[in-house]
Length: 86
Image 1: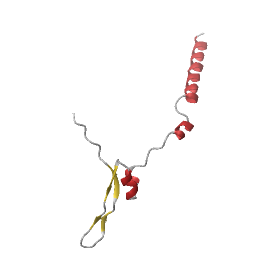
Image 2: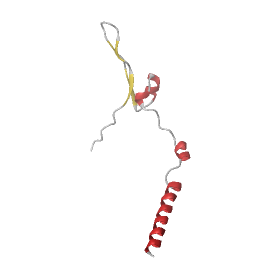
Image 3: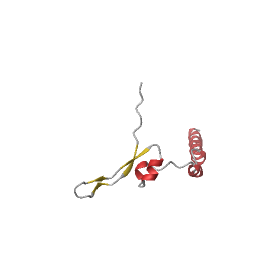
Image 4: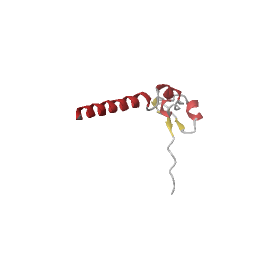
């Protein structure tokens, strides 16, 4: 009798797991329909794209005065979040 009981518990548990896998969570289609996030500031290479957004700031290239060569390329970065005052 206990063997029959153990089998039925096992089958019931397997059915619950299969149901969760089949119907639970977010489907792939729903993930595709989700609105994409905007590009990260550090991935932008054009100054116009960077300055168009409020959360990004453009850092000018650093040029050596003597040689005229570029020490560091210009880049876009995320503005720091304002500190909350209590």
